[in-house]
Amino acid sequence: MKQIAVLAGDGIGPEIMAEALKVLDRLGLGFKYAEADVGGAAIDRHGKALPEATIKACKESSCILFGAVGGPKWEKLPPQEQPERAGLLALRKMFDLYANLRPAKILPPLASASMLRPDIIEGGLDILIVRELTSGIYFGEPKGLSDDEGFDTMRYKRHEVERIAKVAFEAALKRGKKVVSVDKANVLSSSVFWRKVVEEVHGKYRTVELSHMYVDNAAMQLVKNPRQFDVIVTENMFGDILSDEASMLTGSIGMLPSASLGEGGFGLYEPIHGSAPDIAGRGVANPIAQILSAAMMLKYTFNMNKEAGKIEAAVLAVLAEGYRTGDIMAEGCRKVNCARMGDLVAERVGG
Image (cartoon, rainbow, N blue to C red; front, side, top):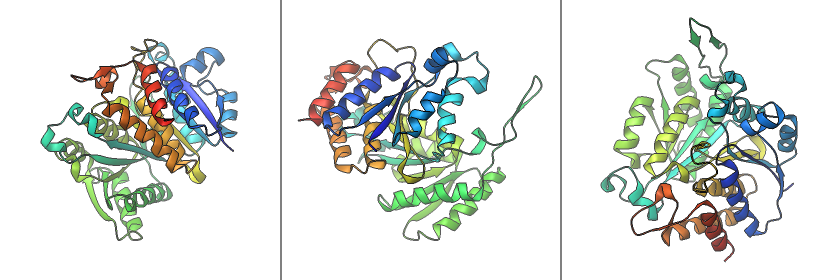
């Protein structure tokens, strides 16, 4: 099956999705798109963030290409009905998309856009954050909210830690053979358990170097010495925070894709940024993260590494030629809008 469920979502989602599909079409791979509503757009049209028609489209597809959801318009809804929790998080849980891969890589043409001093990133930066995505404090029970208190539960089961640790070690075997497991084992019982299970899984991957780091130190080290990292594996909330921090080391959150994977090749692919409602409809969004998310989709769901490489090479070529959207604009470069950036990448993919 070569059908993709296309869920553009809210804000800039439809704009950047159009450019990703433009690039995919240029490859001529014969994909069929099942476009469906999700998030705030689905609430407005269907009364809920994840309608049955959208679920059906996802179940009938090989994977999901996702844009972004949310915005101020829906923030007054009950938390469980808001676009992200009722839409995106529900999809992750429904399809058991437990492994979130978030690369943070500095592309040579954008080295000057990094927030770090040149000497800190000299020689390049290429980090893969492997974030557990369907458990932890975001999903743990019990939860509670009243006028007097609010509470959440951070909970992990053995198989949940085992499988995400395996993903991290397998990824490291194809990279620099180093894994840093991030936790808070000096305070949290769930982290003591996490560290114990990761150590056990490591027994099957002795050619990979494993170390442990507390999350607060990891946040500092990402800024102080990011080149020490190869693969970082961590639980849901810590991964959410650290991956956003890592994204800014590369110059712009608008550059980074992600893959949320389950068993058997099914995955959800999305840029790590949000819906950016403040710039929606203005044509100024950076579509590169969405385009690179499509490349990750080709690689992980369809095993089309050659075609994925064409997209990545096309993005690099466009940047090397000096084209920039506003978020990565630099002196001496040529500023382009969202659609033009998509055109440029598509032209080089097909060239």
